[in-house]
Structure formats: structure tokens, C-alpha cells
Figure 1 (cartoon, rainbow, N blue to C red):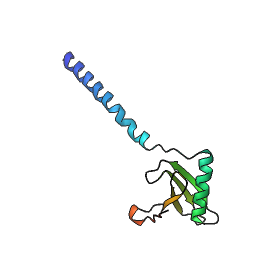
Figure 2: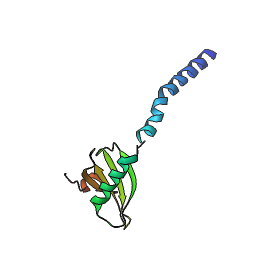
Figure 3: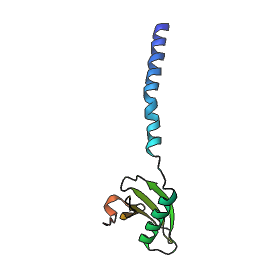
Figure 4: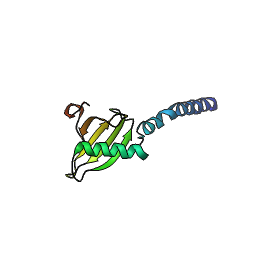
Length: 110
């Protein structure tokens, strides 16, 4: 019986060790890198100019977004939010209203 107990303990430890990398995956996959420095100033200015809304503010940013190089979340004066997508040169390449699915997005070329 002692031998079986030892085998079960070793097998359990091996399973736990094998699962450790999987436990951390969701945490690292959700890590977002925010825009900083001069790039933050340029991205914010480009996004605010694009939305043309008095009282709009930048509320979040991300580098390396899945849709574009930069993503700038802008909250409009009415409380709605728009994600403005920018390329590496801070040109607007698209936008999406917060909460809209991909079929409802209003992508802009250029």
C-alpha cells in the first residue's frame, strides 16, 4: 500500500507541475501595454481630432491592439465610448463604438 501511495503522490505532483504554465496563460494574455510619452500625446490628439466632440476625453490606450498598432478609447460628452484605431504613424484606420460587435463597427479607410 505504501508503494501505491508514493506512486499516486508522484503522479499528482507531475500533473500539477505540467499544469503550472497553463494557470498563468490567461493572466499574461490579458496584459495590455498602454501608450506612453510622446506617442501618448500624438495618439490622444489624433483620436480627439477624429471624434470631433467637445468635452471628449481619452480614458484608455493600448499599444499592439488586435485591430491596429494603437487603440485610443475616447469617452464622449454624452458618456458613450469610441475606440479609435491608429496605425504606427498615428493615422486613423478605424473606429468602433464601445460594446459594438464586429458587424456593427464603422471602419474608416485612410
